[in-house]
Image 1: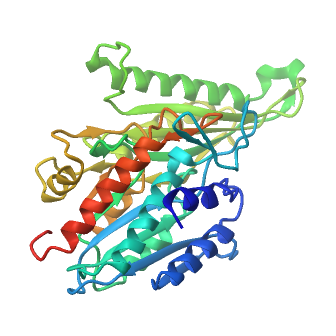
Image 2: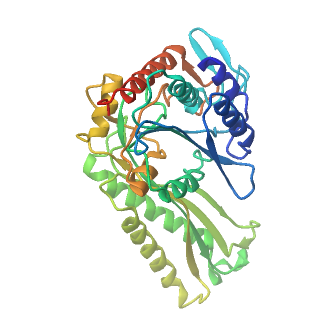
Image 3: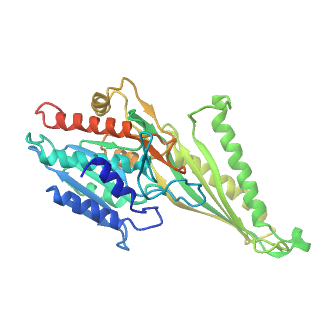
Amino acid sequence: MSTRDLLKRLIGFDTVSRNPNRELMDFVRTWLAEQGIESLLIPDESGGKANLYATVPGVATDGGIMLSGHTDVVPIDGQDWTLPAFELTERDGRYYGRGTADMKGFVACAMTAMAKARASENPLQVPLHLALSYDEEIGCVGVRSLVEHLSNQSIRPRLCLVGEPTELSVAIRHKGKRGVRATFIGREGHSALAPHNLNAIHLACDFIAHLREVQEQLAAPYGGQEQDKVPYTTVHAGLINGGTALNIVPNRCTVAFEIRNVAEDDPDELLHRIQTHARELVAREQARIPEAAVSFELFNEYPGLATPEDSWAVEFVKSLTGANDCSEVAFGTEAGMFSSRLDIPSVVCGPGSMDQGHKPDEFISIEQMRLCEAMLDRLLARLCNPGGL
């Protein structure tokens, strides 16, 4: 089966994060088995979703290279697609379909590389691993059980290549994230007597005003100028929910906010400062309204990526792509998880552009797919060379 045909099959599975991915994973596992490659499924509690980990052994049993990708995609709801989202359409030198760029294009290329490694007349000197995950799009959630599995292994990959779309530039940095839900408690009452009560939405709005102040402080050293890239830590309130009727003073309001931190900033220290200010807001009301309160729930977090530019891992991936320099990506990836929690040097490098991801009529160019296959062919040549890694 060609890489194009693999991509066609992968696109045909509706693996929006809210849906199971097990059917896709069963297809991948069966296809790998047909190539003589064993794989392990790591299911979630429901059994409807799973990670997959597969290895083509080498002469040496330790180390090796891990190709990593996620199998979930973002929804198409509310988007104006002119082509079938879950069918592969080839047109004008492009492959269209949800997930072509982000990131089933790379997954298809990685599967082909695994098959070539298994069929090679020259044995691999070190193993080649494939790691596929679920629920990356909602905050690198699914990969955690895969990370736990690898943490219990005595032998781990020596390098991880995460194939998120970078147009095959070598990205070594991205921000980490904390997703937090703040819940404010006030006192309900008739809106005609609003001053006698405590409006939880007002408390939440005062809190959001503080978040904006924090963001201004973080951006100030950079002059506040519009930039293509945002080189500083950001704070953002994304969801607010409170109130039941216009004539009732609301006694409860929740605000979901996030911190996306550069590697130099400590997100936990920043979160502590934000929480302290929120508690001070509430404390000023408690003498009058004793039940006033605020609580916080950390519902999602993943670490940033900061792989040293002069590391052997970066130089190795550069040698595969021909790149002379490095880049960073604005979006988060699973690379930070592998790097910080397993101490596996990780680099983000894959075909396609995130400018096409998450949009209607998502596509990847056929040329980018070809270049990715060529990069992975060079990887296999290196892995088959006794001195190649």
